Length: 238
Image (cartoon, rainbow, N blue to C red):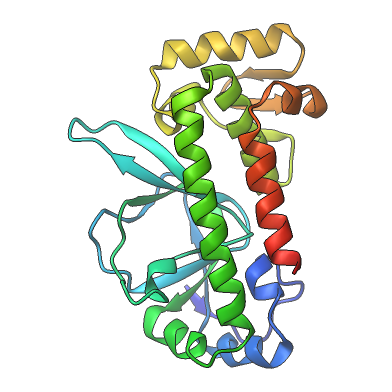
């Protein structure tokens, strides 16, 4: 891990990119650029949040864990957000597991330094509170999705979210990994993926998947994808 010597350009994390230059430059000496490998557990439920992670790329998930070890994806974080929101809510304890779904580069900031800048009451406070609202809305939408929508709809939504995070239609991911994120057995994911393959929406094999027809995939996906994406885009633009 190396401390940043100068302001990175361009800034790819959307929250940091929204800051005025003066606010961002106050943070620069304290930011550390790190690489996070796939499936790295950043926090377990109940851990103290000692640092926040502003993702430049890749994706992480907030996961609920059952007593028998099953996981359910509550919400995802990409370059539109930050891992560690409870820090600025003065409850620096994570309520769930946080794990990287894809390799990610992130800017890490110690919790006490994030809180100091947040308490200045400037733009950082404004964008983090907006993002906290967006993340809450995503968690609510996810609960609806898990309860009411089909595996195929949820699979399409998940693939679109991943594609947005990596900014590519090609993703290195296994069906087993998708099953863990969606909380279903692998054979059910396989059947749903096969339907999408037969429709010409995707192709996959050898641990990689490619979206062939994004418009078609969005048509099959549940409305949760559109609702969450529009919510995040709207809040970060205002």
